[in-house]
Image (cartoon, rainbow, N blue to C red; front, side, top):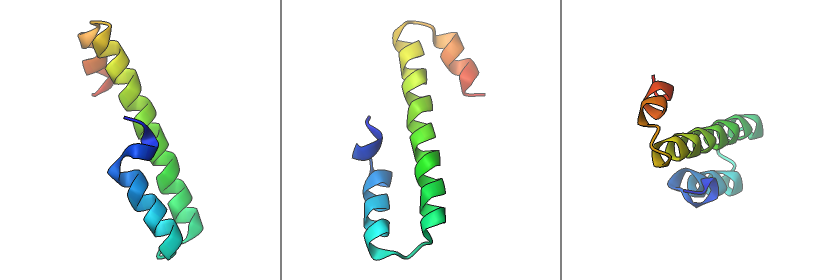
Length: 60
């Protein structure tokens, strides 16, 4: 899943227009969100290559 097509990304866009949170806070959330998707993609890649143990090891 692309990071800009998930529920969190839609929420972030909404919050940026409503300005309920400070810009710095939204930037930190956005960075964590991007890291989450990178990690998820790495886990999926390992799993699809058949390296299930390595994928599981990254979850610990």
